[in-house]
Image (tube, rainbow, N blue to C red):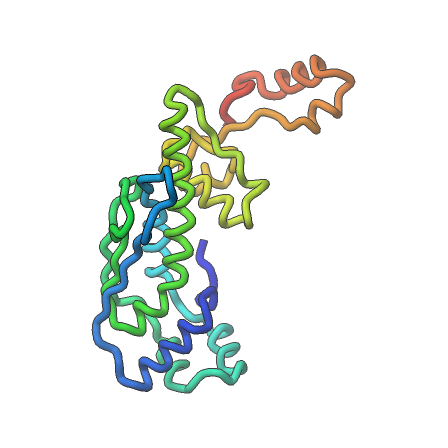
Length: 227
């Protein structure tokens, strides 16, 4: 779950270089919030804090990434030196995950030297926006179906592997009972659920034979949780 330090917008690096050249390294405060909510959606659910903390604690520029930045010809030696020693030194204050929040209410605040706070902005928005979006959708579903077993089966349709894995986590925060994504159980302890696909049924002569074969293979948890 540790992406490259280059998973950011070019303008973030451009601004950091400009800050350094201008000597603007004083403390800055960045806040993440939603300006307004869509009609009929009067709350959101905070999620993604764990991934934000992991990212900030582990953010490093590798030798290969620094070499690539040098070869690109875009950046000064001062910026390269700054990035080679980069360690996030700021403070983070945030709502606990699963907290309900509203428009114009910050859910996370970064207090750090200006270049640091600027550099991490893209990834923090990326993580917080996506997971809070999924957690909020899951919470609305859970409120509409309080007596139903709700399970995330979104990995096959997710926009990438990380999105699928974090969607499983966020939906669990939002009130789902579990997920079909096996790696989410390993990484986050989320209960994994699964039965069979239509392709399995089609591979047999009839549905009864398919269900009997599946029952023989999974006698302890037919139709329930994967072990």
